[in-house]
Length: 241
Image (tube, rainbow, N blue to C red; front, side):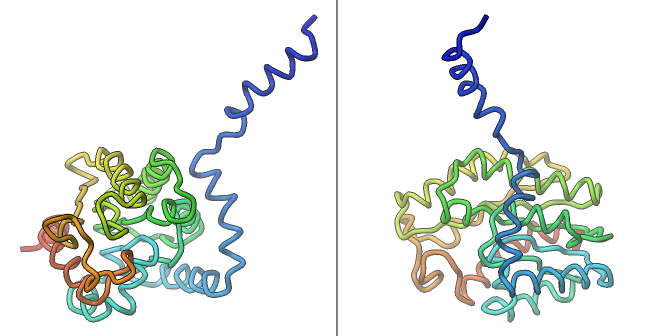
């Protein structure tokens, strides 16, 4: 007969395994906190409705930095992406699990984009300094969901942009660690990885305040840098001359 103390020890030993959540399970659990935010819920409902009736060749997926194409980056969105039937599902404050929940709840609908541009994860860092492996797992789950929904869609996976003034900033280092993992998702066919971080930094690795004054969100010039750095790869993926 197993002694009570041994039973307790065995229970504690297996507890982390029993409680571990996949990105999908985490997405279901954590979306509730975002649904309580009126603008977030309204944006989600609007995007779901639009997704059903919009021709989309180019899909942008992300957080506030991607969301910003609709304000600070709007001039360059009109120039580079609006003519390409682009659709933006970036949401301020979102983490990987929120993006995954949104995709699972109608934001791709019957959408079959030629290319999906993904840049997500800095809020997993900023909100809780989540482990790089966990954030990377969320990114990989997003890619998997896209290809389950639309197998022919090519993914342009962007490295998470630098944050913090200096190269040694703890959040910069964590984002770099995430990037070192997710870049391995590139397969030369369905997933292309691109890190344009150096375009935002000076020769000492410092983040220019004229590009990102809060060391996180780009100003209009930052969106111009982003668009121009991404353009050659995007043209290739879209089979444009």
